[in-house]
Image (cartoon, rainbow over all chains, first blue to last red; front, side, top):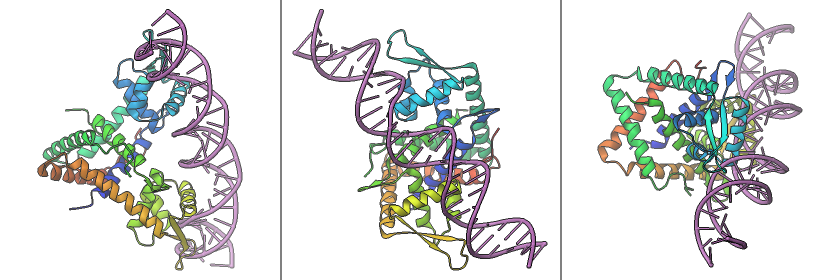
Length: 148
Length: 148
DNA sequence: TAAAATTAGTTGCAAATTGCAAGTAATATA
DNA sequence: TATATTACTTGCAATTTGCAACTAATTTTA
């Protein structure tokens, strides 16, 4: 029975690092939180602030300010919803879409490179395992409530 | 061929969250970076500042200040090395050791809980996959240098 | 249907975190 | 012995963070 935490500690650190370094596209430099935000906006249709804030699991006040920054950078647009005037609908600008896509491509390229060190069988196994893990984590009662 | 990035994005977000919430032990609250630092100090014998800073991949100046904070919190001690007077040797205080151990236990407990949603075979497969992934990532030429 | 409660989002702090540039002191190199 | 390198620290200055307290819109409820 090996030390599971060690394994995950290393893995998450690597991904943290990767996220940190992923995020400049030409002259545009986005932080890793910002890249997550772009990613989630891109994935959804007409999402609200709260939806994205929940998806990336950051405080709504922090999120509000991050969006302000992204708007200044002309990567994101914010429009009042006609259905509910409290709600702001988020979308990517053309540039934002480009940045999101470029980051996505480079991340996938990186993952391809990583997987190139494995044979087909290993590759499949690893992918399936990550899926299993994600499912198990979402079922877990412990995650994301204070642990102690 | 599914979207690998999506899989990893979700996984790392979950672990990020977990790390965020992991880290209060009684009255002592440590940030996730600080818990990584404690973890790495605990793992090594008589490590230097630079060694730990490299291990957790943070800037040495930021690290220097984080250590100052941890010393004020009485979780870490710093002693000049007798072999090389430039070097500071780090160690955990009794309290620091306690905090590190408690966090480690709660993380492992969480992981056990997550794995409890799987059968033995799946469990083994997932663990083996994480190992494979870590190895592949360490072989990668792309990781941790600017991607674009 | 008017008052009360909830929801979405924004600001004002104040603290913590970050990294670059420039420093000191100790050691290694030429 | 002079020069470079290494280990670490400090001075900024910018960014990021979260809590509390706010506005405005919508729902609930009595």
